[in-house]
Length: 558
Image 1 (tube, helix red, strand yellow):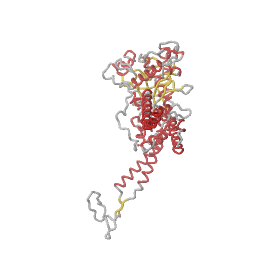
Image 2 (image 1 turned 90 degrees about the vertical axis):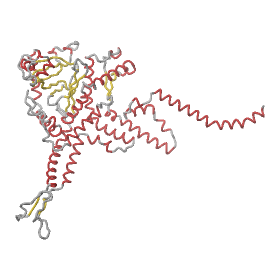
Image 3 (image 1 turned 45 degrees about the vertical axis):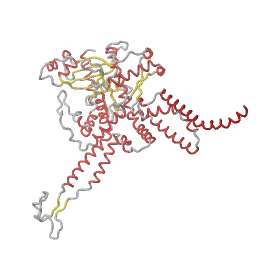
Image 4 (image 1 turned 90 degrees about the horizontal axis):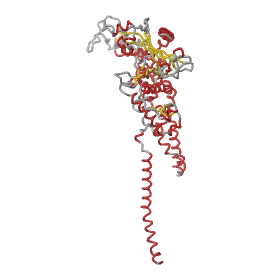
């Protein structure tokens, strides 16, 4: 394909996908205006190639009540704490071939890769934690989140760089199996930024002139980044190791340029660089539906109720006065300490009354009902269970965790398959391309480095809480039987050496707090010796008495 054909193909693809999501953008704008105000005015009425006229402006005109915004923030925090807690190792890499689990060299290599991955992911310049939180916020608000993962380009420093992509910029397509394999991102760069990213000589003449002038360097220009599967027409050959051997092709195009240099960069990827996830999907739809979409009727209702309650509250605090029209009260004063003559009759009957304002308590109850619905959609109520009921036994805690795991697994499990899995694959590829992964052992290389991801997040442990809860229920039943019958045989069924490590894993007990197998054996040997010594001490008086009784008999024989 020629450069002109590539540019035209990218623009045609973009126009095709951009023209089909007007309904989505209308709903996203309504949500942004009410609960995610920093994204308001970003989905509709945007002028191509023009600076954002809303930069720095207050965008809370439609947000009367902040319950939805607060619920969204808590949702994102809960998703992060359940799936990608920054304070713990929330996944491990293991060989796909289980026989390699017995190979110490292979196990150590996978552990080393996993540790390297976390080191670069949470490096200061990677910016993963903040961008992933932004990704969760978009997921809760709009139902679709997108993370761009690429090699770090900062003073020749190696590593990974993450960026949560604004959904207003992001368009994508699925393949025949429902997997996202094509992404188109429309974004803006100043002329100076474009020169930094693509090189001055690769830019069209207009942008080049802007980049080299003090006045035009800050002028914005529209670009499209297209990533799609490389076709045979584009020279795809999987046996090659150069650009044509990369499964995905990458084009950066100046959107509105008709210059010969509209194609400013052409490259490729071995792995898809955009990790795109959806909250829940409706049949036939490509974009996801969010908690905010389900809660939008309640959010709108709550805003209207809040407006009404504020009006009624104003009337209650500063009431409307009703007075007899006799001309006496024309100069009635509401100033503190004022004296109004003629406000009562000669008999002391008030001639001025307040207008009834309705029942504020009923209005508050109606608002509370809508707030509960909104919090339920954003899972706030679910995460509040353990906080609201802190006085629970260990068994009750496990039961609560099991219930939460069962309710959360369908929703959050999708994030592991659609977002985290592809993201980890991309991260490993970036590290390998930069030579940051140690060489594979021979046994791993023979299996082509195939691996599986074992998630060890709080959510994963909650999903396993069913096992721990079943153990606690069984143990309680056995102990009641022992208490009644004084028969210890039911406890023989419990293999505590296997049970306790698994229960500690489920309860997230750090490995460094646990004793090693050698230490456990030493403690058991010590207890065994102590018990033998105690038995000897207890048996000593009886043995001495027996010896005394035997001595006369032994003397007589002698």
